[in-house]
Length: 427
Length: 172
Image: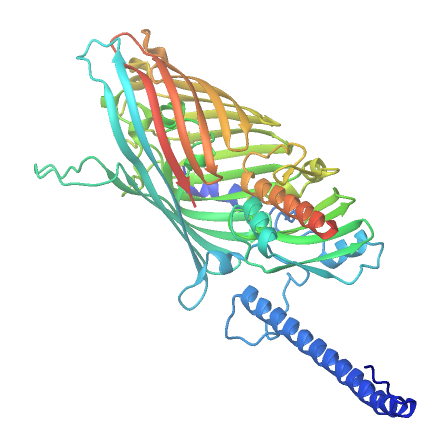
């Protein structure tokens, strides 16, 4: 049986319900406003947290950071200080980095009068630590400390020799910005000739081993003690001008320039050298440059039959899309009857290297190089080498390398053909 | 070689008037004003979280240390002012994107000691009309500058980041 509300009861219910509904609506609106305010506060706190994290100055109240030149920028990375420089000492900031490479050589000796001796070796060839310190915006220090061949060990034979490695300071110099376009440097400096002597981090070049022109004619890693200027002008021109210690070759090594490196260890400075280089990169993908060096006595006064020496060098690099072609030519002229008698008054080498970056992570290359440290000897003293291989970069600063080398050497000199594998990194 | 004979040319070169290889080439505010006919819109913010953070990390080859990127947008145009370290110090770059393609890229502030050649128009011109290809890569090759490899790399990365974030901004 249905019950029906009397009309009067219904009217009473409606009269009572209207204020209640209105009250509920008011409460709901208030709740929404409260939640909106809470949401605003959460967003503000989130922004404040992000500001704090991004400023890298945890503990400092947000808003106290001085306005700087980055007011509009939203860096995807921090500044050098934020990313790699820690606050160090009382002033300035310090950077640490490095590079290294390990090689596996599997080379077969051919065409030699001497007993056959293949080269099969695994060698952590170079382990380098960078250390730099920025004293101010305009004064900084840069250095590279190198361990070659992994370790040093006293032979305990009284000779003082160590084997098989070497520890050396590859660079160590102070740099002063004279103005926005010119810097002065003083210390142990890399000689600005060719490509590899200055830029030799493994991910930056093809081939497991450094090429032989950049070893025997431009004696990489070639550093000297001195001072100089580096700067740029016009549309893409740059220059380097250095005054520095020179090489100290000798007749016992047929005046080979590579044997003349002193490593700036109490290096003789009786006869200084000067090096000048000019580069032009005025259009995308192209670099053209040349360098000249003059030293007044390449034996540092130890050989009366030797004298001044001049190095002339040219280099280019041309990249278009994934293709690159680079080349280096360098030649020495040595004065004096001593070098002339050995045929070493002319020492010359050059190489060309085409490469194709098939993908951003994989590139193939070929190289032809030839060098001769006794051009005028009247006998066959020229070496040449053909290389083909590839680089694979799983990360832009990490590289795996493979190449095959095929040498041609003078009669009676060892010729090594075979494969090389390498891994390298820089950071 | 006598030292005194060498000092004079060295000092002379040091006194050559600077051509501003380092410094502020264009103030960020001026870049934005130019991009929006004198009246930049209110900046908006895009958060680098989730998939966006992964994608930007993949482009930069390292984690971004920012949680947010500010940008300015009106209709189909957006402007981005970003920084990336070349070798040692951040390079500030402005990028304007019109309908998913770069219409302008400028080096605004250069602080590195080498690699400033990337500021020249002959280099930045290569980015004009560049869009995003699969893998968040540019749809065209950029010819490098020998000796400025790290600066070239930094600019190319920032162009990719700007295009990617612009795409995220307009994605439904």
